[in-house]
Image (cartoon, rainbow, N blue to C red):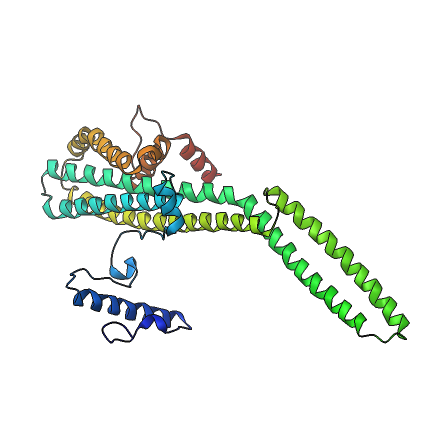
Length: 339
């Protein structure tokens, strides 16, 4: 039991996801009870961000090793990923707040609607940048992992075969040991099988050494580093996939808001609306770029920004400005779609 006489949920075990969720809920109740006893107003929630209705992406567990690296002045991939997630979350909260304010305060005048549409369009560029950025991480990391995962899979396969062959050889040796001295023919048969298993085992060990050498490792302990590397990259891909899905959803929501404003603008002069919007666009696009640069720092990429703008133009059915041609990537993509 705990200090306050309550049953400690951590001592219980679970055999299913439902039991695990129940354990987490019980643990949250226990922690919140202790916080209340201490007079601390903060509370914890065992539910995921999605279940809590939060738009933020959750951070990952950093671990003692990552924090120790940071304390020595070495940048940890896990800590850096968490810093980027926090910056993305702050930017997301800011953009969603701006959209909500636009919807509440916009008036039906041409100038007000033009400004609201351009602000919303700029926010869409930010969301599109985050989608393209996340997709780039997925593509690059997956490509980096392809050969590594293939080689590590071969290593696991050969390691498993070695274990099976060793068990087979051990069984044969045991069977031979149990023979009577008079069982000459059975002894010869078992000797042949043992010799064959021994030869196969040596070939498998040689193959395993070759695979480990491609990774620059000499033993199984060294291969654990490779497994650690793969696990970390898979985690990065999972976080990037979650981010891509999240920001794609936000982009869709912003597009719906844009279409609502577009419907309200139908009663206004289209030429005047276009002129008003184009006069505001450079400043709004500059604002979007500043937000992204602030959030991504040295990771900010101009090519990704161009692709994000192209994606928003496609979503809104816009034609490129005369002095601003579409990207080569999209022209090639459209050509391939036509074929």
